[in-house]
Image 1 (cartoon, rainbow over the protein chains, first blue to last red):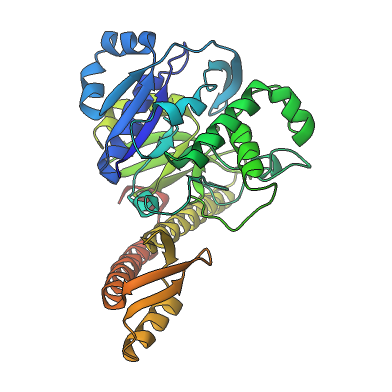
Image 2 (cartoon, rainbow over the protein chains, first blue to last red):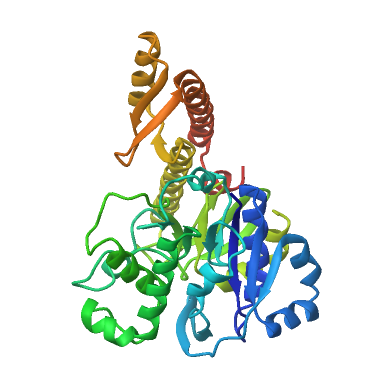
Length: 286
Length: 116
């Protein structure tokens, strides 16, 4: 059975997802020792060539799979320390991963999820078609995560995180991805049923609903990927030294930041601008 | 701001960073003690090691069914090999935990916690 990692990158005016995917893909390839493929579009590839990172991409990625650039329909507020921007982002094509993945067993990850350990290697052989994390863990361990980071709504079902999804190419996983796509296409209708806020499409919610339905509307005993260690967008990746990622974390007492360093731990870094600021040093980790 | 209060705040920042570094280390060790085997997932801890060692002592070392961390039955064909693997992982991880934990204990400033 071939195992591999899959990433999406569709650049926007504000965030260089191509850069992010290079770092994320490179780290996954190094630490999990499996091939990595990228799903992207022509304009993002053009940008890679223009910004002279395309050769690096060819080195890192086993396959660069092109798809039509999806329409820009989603916006979200992204913080970078105290600054806040409304940025466009493209996230509505993730359900195509099942069809496009060249691997029999795929780990689909976000480009802001950095695999810095080989922990996920232990999950390749688990007998379960779709495995996702069912929790996120705040980097400052004080749980700034709110109720709506654990459940899809105040009265809704448990949230699974689509930041990392491991799936096997089989009929069950195919049905799961088709169902997630159906939830995306009928997002408002499902919002009426599952009581989540339909204003902004989120893969976490579409995948959680699909998982809940596939699980027979129950929470069964099932395998989950490890909780996602997460630094929020109000935190910042300050600098990278040797194997350590050094963050400034927003404290909750006096509004000041305090430093924390992470090594050999997989981490989801929500402040994407701080990743691109440290691009050169992060690439050196690959 | 008076100097004593500033000192207290600095110390508070130190304690905050130290607490996070300790938890991060604990989680890292815990992740390394997760063992995927034959389609199941085992948490390597003293209970698992004891049970496996007891079975080995009783010469029951072939085709043993163990219950994994998700309560699924997993067939272990060769328990001796399984024991060697979990022992190796357990001692490597706990030794690393011990070393890193002791390093953290000696750090007295935020700078040394982060940079060393």
